[in-house]
Length: 318
Image (cartoon, rainbow, N blue to C red; front, side, top):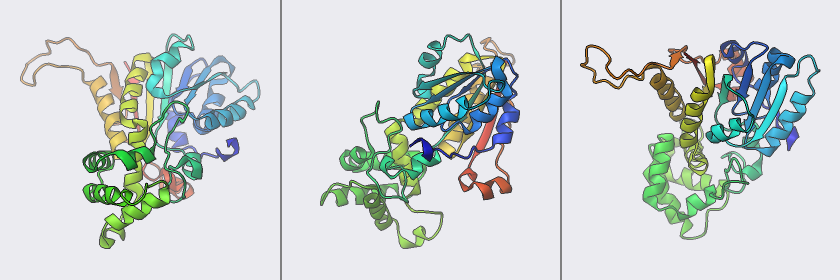
């Protein structure tokens, strides 16, 4: 599967600029993938730097290791690749025995290879088993279990909360009705149910009708929003003064958590708004660099359509 990892790094030049790395720095790629971003970062760090890559996908780690270790000695930093989820950031970085980190990169969402491999079950365009687990070795809950066992109320709540799908309740009702006849076992089965639930007039606009529901179920399977918040908060703790937190998100739910986490670090005062001066003594620990997110150029979107929804936000540790 390592050959599947031909991931095109999104906003690569912008990330390299915002990471602001020097040759002696320690860098953490919290979503390593096939090392699309990290390969270029490694060249900036050189042999005096340290590159730590985290991923929960063994295929990604294998592909990244092959690419990074192929660098010539004069370009290759100290490399440590870790199998795990960035939600367990504290435990992972303690194992590396490092005092702090100079820059973190989070490139959120599902990588192209995961979407394209039918057996992973992430894609509404490819028929496969309803799995959607980022790390099958650690997670037992699958998309099939959610679809076939959750009641209509819980399904509607998950779909609405994780995707803003306006037809969430109707889709949930159709899922429950369909599974009474036989279990919904494949992505094609689920797509068929979703298409039946959404009126034809609404299916004609806004992209594939199953996109939002598949996103919502994937987020639920992997607890993505809870994990993201934990990972970002840990990254802020590990950053050295002046260190950068660089995050690329692909949908509004992720972006909201990133924005709120950065804003909370930049404005930690808990005093009532009518207090004339701060009495709580809580000082900012972050400076938000990007008041508005950086987005891809039209040229990049043309080269890589999956970059279309990307938003890059940056904060600096004070």
